[in-house]
Structure formats: structure tokens, C-alpha cells
Length: 220
Ligand SMILES: [Fe+2]
Ligand SMILES: [Fe+2]
Image 1 (cartoon, rainbow, N blue to C red):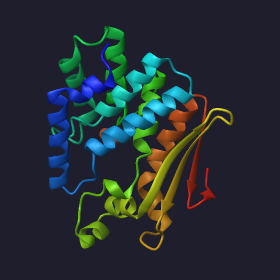
Image 2 (cartoon, rainbow, N blue to C red):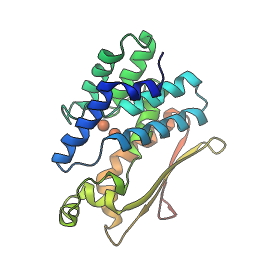
Image 3 (cartoon, protein in one colour):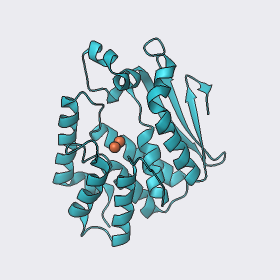
């Protein structure tokens, strides 16, 4: 099995992520490129380590997390399925069938309407991905355009975002600092309630409770 470092050096992976950045920027869509991939990979590795997965599963979690959005340059709608298949095409010789299917399933599952967890790796990728709400995800520079789109508005208003995990209290907590002068808090829930439900389901699969703290107020 190869490591995340080797996956990150693959020229096709580098180009997929680059083209994803270019394509989504054209549509003023939130950032799904290298920053997001690295952050989700980091968060996934941390969660995998703290919940007690093996070194190998930690590596698989970070690889699936790093690769989860790299097919966005082909299609937003099917990027999860395409990404899973593309991963297999590139790395068929570098992983065992079991490792490959674990990664493919985690990539395919992260954006599914009927999201279901069959192994901890897929739950970890969902937690790491769906918790990434932050100002740096806004690619649009024009303030009028930012204000006109609710996803851009809410991400822009999120000045800090941290995913904490506590093994003793069995809690995984997303802490956000949202500028409520920029957006009313209700707008956060308008677009992210579904994501928070996915996070709660993923945490529960891992045997944890999901917590949400916004501006130091514990909401979950
Ligand atoms: Fe995605
Ligand atoms: Fe993502």
C-alpha cells in the first residue's frame, strides 16, 4: 500500500485538483481544491487516530479524505461516484482489493443522498468534509457577489472553524465563530442543517456524540 504523500505526488491527482479549482471558480462555487483536500485529509487522520483506528486505517482515511473531491472538474452532481472509480483507475496496482474498496466506498459515500456507513473510514471522511465551513472557502472576491449567494455569505461570515475530538467524553465538536453582523445565524442552519445531521450520524457510527458550538454557545 502507498501512503498519502505518494498519492499527493501523483501527476493525475495534482491535475484533477487543479482543474477542480479552475472549474468551480468559473461557477463562483465554494473552494473544493488543494486547501480543502489537505484540511479534510488532516482532520480525517486526527479523528482516525483519536478513535483508535490502526495506522493503516489512519492512512486510508487520510487518502480517501484527500481524494474525495478530485472529480469535481467533471461533474458536481456525480463527483463522488466518478471520484471513486477514477481513484481505482489510477491506483489499482498500489493497494490491495480490500484497501481500494474501502477508499472507493468512502469517496462515493461522502455526497450520497442515502448516506450510509459501512466502515469507520467512510464515517471519518464525512465528518472531516462536512465540517469544513470557513471564510477561506469563498473564491469570489466581489463583495456584492458574496452577499448575493447564501453559501458564499455563510462561509464568508465563518471566521474560525475547528473540529475537536475528545476520547474520554466521547464527543466530536465543531466550534465555529460566525460574524452575525454579516449573516443572521438562521442562514447557517438554512444551508448546513443537513450536513450537521450527516456529522451526527457519522459520529454516532464511531460511538461518539456530535456537538456544535457557535460563538461559544453550545447548541448540540
Ligand atoms: Fe464533495
Ligand atoms: Fe468536500
